[in-house]
Amino acid sequence: MTPDRSLAEALAAGVLVLDGGLSNQLQAQGCDLSDALWSARLLADGPEQIEAAHTAYVRAGARVLITSSYQATFEGFARRGTRRAEAERLLVRSVELAREAASGAAEGVWVAASVGPYGAMLADGSEYRGRYGRSVRELERFHRPRIEVLAGAGPDVLALETVPDADEAEALLRAAAGCGVPVWLSYTVDGGRTRAGQELAGAFAVAAGNEQVVAVGVNCCDPADAEEAVATAVAVTGKPAVAYPNSGERWDAAARGWRGDVAFDPALATTWAAAGARLIGGCCRVGPATTTALSALFPGGATP
Image (cartoon, rainbow, N blue to C red; front, top):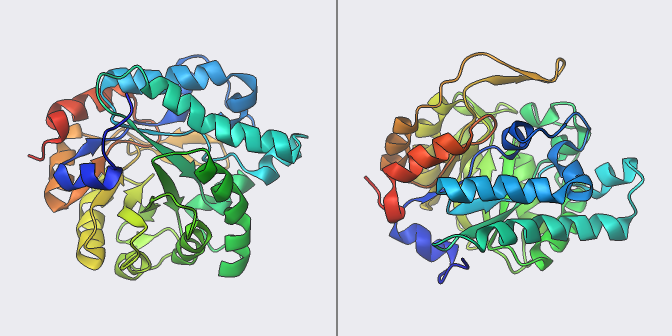
């Protein structure tokens, strides 16, 4: 169902539950994600699988769906021989697939178009390090064309997500300025710092006073790091926070696999909400069962 109010209005009223990791749900459906494009490959080769994954999260109670465009870039598609016009069509299709899945929901479901970091295009784990040797201006030039296409597809919000570096956050916000779509900004963090090593207070400050930004926070991090980061984001920006950590396992870029134990306890989400999070969900390795548990904690957008 199409929401009857803006995302910002909904966040002012209470918590909205985000979906979980798209890639793990696609793998659960039997999809091969070994390609450098990761889940974005299926925009061309298996769009019905992407819609099915979105639908699984809608059925689990997600009120916000994040599109499959995280690793979908013109440069990445070009390496596969995809022409620019076709790459644009696939980016637009990522929004359409989420909309189609949302249309069957009994309640309004918002669509967030994913804009991943420069490191995601490199497909070598660079988003967990940042500091690519690119200037803010160079990163802005990289991000703007994709943002323009995604914004033109009509999402409810752009998810500037898994950002490892405050410089890239600045570039993303510059690239999104004037696109006509609100954004949320979400860092990937390690402890109390960005992956590039910057203090979170300074990193969140790049979004302070920016009216286009409807939420600021963290994703793709250890669940234990979320509460402090949420509190800092709210204190620095005065905006609602977003929190969608990983399962607690860690990505081994060299081995291209996950290591460690699951540490995502849905009950932790109540502490994130108490600290000011209004968009709460999961990232990598967090599936529909956790979405269902979160939906039970926040029925109808309630804040415990």
